[in-house]
Image 1: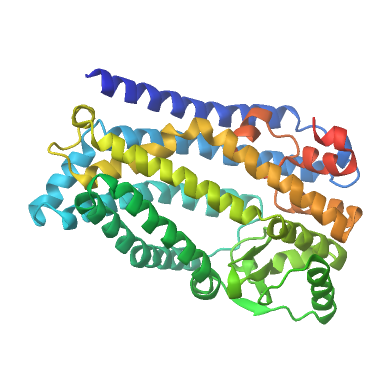
Image 2: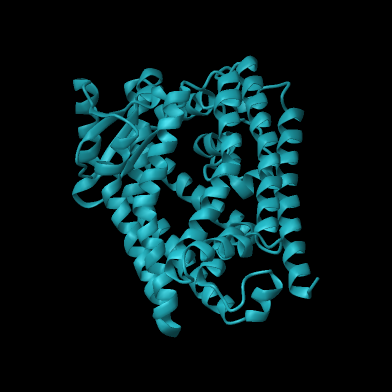
Length: 418
């Protein structure tokens, strides 16, 4: 075993154990606090609901332990284990070496990863979500979503993949800049197209029919100085009992979306507060900031990919084909990069939580403090979010602040900042 292979496997094992350990900590911490509702939520959340959320969280964390092990094993089998080299050989036996075989290789790796994920997704949906009363998805809807997602992914993703691989072969030393530009343009295009053409393939969107609520929302939009192309209700209840609200798109395609489950649970003042929070993201330019961060990270990744291609000895030590196949390098890079970059996840999560706090502050000014707190308490309870997550697990994974910190920050800035 070469030193490069040993180093890769060591890092891969360390990240896999870290992910498994974080899930174990979550189970231990949540279980330890299962017996009592935190003081801040006494009276608002029953002990039975608190314990149900704890059990739901632990069930998801146990699945995350399995997921961490399987993803680590897949990366080890396909990269130093020689799986990518075998797949490329099979494709080159069918198609001559070049763009076609490289595209086939990357698609094959994506399909294998999807097949590995499928049993976990089925278990998550039809066992865990069903056990705790959240699942409303039928097998027919699940399979239809899977098929439509695969078709949309192929139609949109394969041309981009082919373009990146062509640029790797023909773009010279600066190929990574051109490829990044193509990837960035693709993402902006998807953001624009998603509300009008992609999302309706999976859900139905109907204009908000409640005249009183419509008037209330329009008054909120006027106060916030925001223009949106309609307020829509999404049939989220076809798949899940969870509730949510979001805004999507940009330019003329900006729209507000409310889950129908959210309308069933929150009163008008609470709905207004939730929408004010989403508008806070818009007014504070959080979407643009996150997009800029995503584009910056992706630029660094493309540069890293170019640097990797310049070390054939390293590639050979990882059982990748020599002479270098661009498809093999790309498949290995995007398979390993999420695992190897996992240690920076806390920074990304912290940045997201910071935006959530800022949007909460904006919403409390626009729609009132009490309705926002009431809405947050209901949302955390209805979505089965534990009130007592492990702090280290939360630092790594939580894009939204834990309930106690979030509501605590609204009720007492000193308490929420702890």
